[in-house]
Length: 113
Image (tube, rainbow, N blue to C red):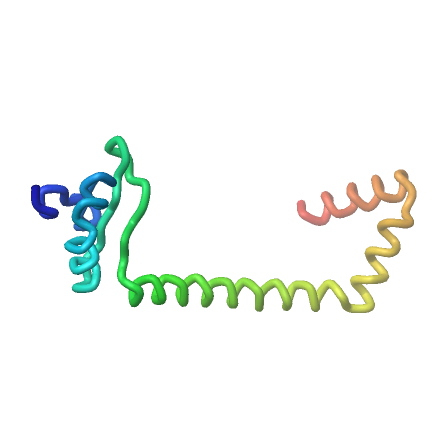
């Protein structure tokens, strides 16, 4: 059977069983080098994807950019939490009695409307 007999309609990737992949790895590798993608299945369920190194690196860079953006946001939130006013508020909250915490909760709820 040819690789084209195993196409995945959603992705356009070749879909092939692990057994066929093992027996035709050279052809699969060549397909991937040429820009294709191969989904490897086991018992008709997708288990792995074979992609080119260029595509892998592009995906890795995309994830790194998202992680960098989230790290920046986290650092900004953390910096805001480290102000003297925030520290004083947290110290007061941890030192408050249950009655004081209850009053503060009611007051905050009333502010929200």
